[in-house]
Image (cartoon, rainbow over all chains, first blue to last red; front, side):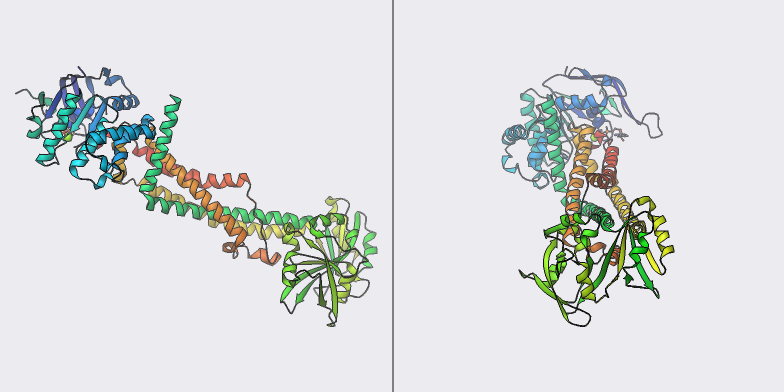
Length: 225
Length: 398
Ligand SMILES: Nc1ncnc2c1ncn2[C@@H]1O[C@H](COP(=O)(O)OP(=O)(O)O)[C@@H](O)[C@H]1O
Ligand SMILES: [Mg+2]
């Protein structure tokens, strides 16, 4: 299992007046090369679960092992180091920096890794070609179309050749065509051996044939119908 | 590993440069204000430094005690015979007579300072030759030989000729030959100066034989200056006795007040700048918070983000320093510190036509940096540190 959660709970602001219990007792295993969809209404805890899988913070209690590392034992700094080797993130609205060029956006994860500019460009160009956006390399990311933007976001998640891709409601702001295109690309990535977890309540996502398993979350718990 | 780390720092520096460029209007504003503060500080530092250097030079050539005759509260000629009376006072090394006056050139509307003295008589008279750019000092028996300062030469517009004439009080002409020029290093003292021997000065001003304008007294032991000055006033009726420490004090009072006033103005400018820097930096915009959260999710460490802010500040303050200090140098050298003229009025009374040679010691530069760059770095990096604790998950979809 590439992702293995057992008894995971997350409480925000624990012990304070604004304490929120976001996840309770989650058991989840995701095998390498599979594609899983986390489904559930808004506020159910999908993003929180992705954040734990994505090594952004450890669970409040329970065990989370991502690519054979126990998160609970890792201090913040090592979470970051582990994250950038392991996880590629695709955000809702894709979260590019609009004033940076497409090329600069895609290579952002490589800067703190000490990858030299030449090598960065080489790696980016490969991805740009793969997603047919080479002609946009020097454009400010704020000035490209929605479809191009989504491919930029995907390219950025792949730039360090991370084994796990996480996407948080990637189709929420896309039309049907682009949503289908997104899932097609995910399918291709799965075929190359990537492990993919998508949080979404969009039927175009969870009903997609490439999805191996759909996990429904309600009020922070896995819902078994 | 070390290689990667270096490459990483270069990448971060590169990112800092490009993010300064992205926010170029804001960066430029901060840069200009910053450069202006450094400009003011550096100009002021250069001027005060140059002036106190000049004051020291002036004092080196000032006789330890100057004796002048007063009548009805005004200075008049002093008899050379007083020399003998002075000679009886114990502790006096030498008394050198001098004729010191001004000459107003009605044709050119220029004012010159004329000094008549016999250089050989001065204890360190031979040293004066080293202040010359060319030629030599006139001797007591050469007639009509003068050494002139830079602006005198310019005003007379000699252009290759070495002779010129001045009017005596009875409007007859007296001819002079230039036998030397002072070097520009001594401009503060010699700019408007014409040095000739005692006999020529007496002739030019029609001062009767046996009379001079003042007597320069050199003492054997500098510690006794005050005692000897008191003895001189007791021994000679109706004379004014000026001592070097007195003159020094006058310079210091005028100068100290001016620089104190200036410092207060500068400190308030500095305070305003620090407040501005703080204000600019602490109010992180939502865009900046978003950028930080995205970078963190993409694997940037808090220290990497801090390094970006740090480099941005270093670049801005480095540029501001270069700009400010260069502008200050130009201001002081080529525009004679014209912005500070009102503050420095006291000096133009002491020394008209001031020519400043600014000097900037490494210590001064460090001081200026300590007062500007460090507050600025603190004001920009500390708030960035607070925002670097922005949780990364805020970049995820809600
Ligand atoms: N940073 C946070 N601080 C406090 N509460 C949070 C935070 N993030 C999410 N929550 C809360 O945790 C719960 C789950 O949120 P989230 O994981 O974002 O759900 P979803 O992504 O399914 O909409 C919600 O009640 C939400 O208000
Ligand atoms: Mg969410």
